[in-house]
Image (cartoon, rainbow, N blue to C red):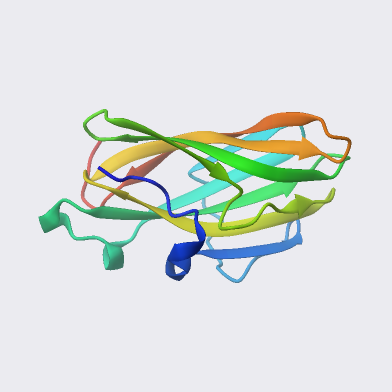
Length: 162
């Protein structure tokens, strides 16, 4: 089962990224409902909004596709850079897959205090629901590395009660 999120350059059709001042909206707007998950680590806030994508899913073939929009906001006092990512993806059967890679959507954004980076990517599953969580490996301008938490969020197809 290939459940790797589409955080690599070859799948641009399902991605969008923007760098902007924190508190402003990107080109892909979302409503102000409660996010799927949110975590704050050393001044770096990671907010996730996940949704089912019927256009990219085919349940009859056991393929459910989910999009997620992530906003990484630097609410701290020092400039930070996202170096790499680590995802832990769990499907409805309990199968766990870990994915590691450089940056996100082909970028390693530098976030000055008060700025944010937003991108949309996707994850295929062979079950109608699952979850994702992980970390971004960050580094400060002074070279101090740390992991910014990506709190667990649900991936859930329509009409699924979990």
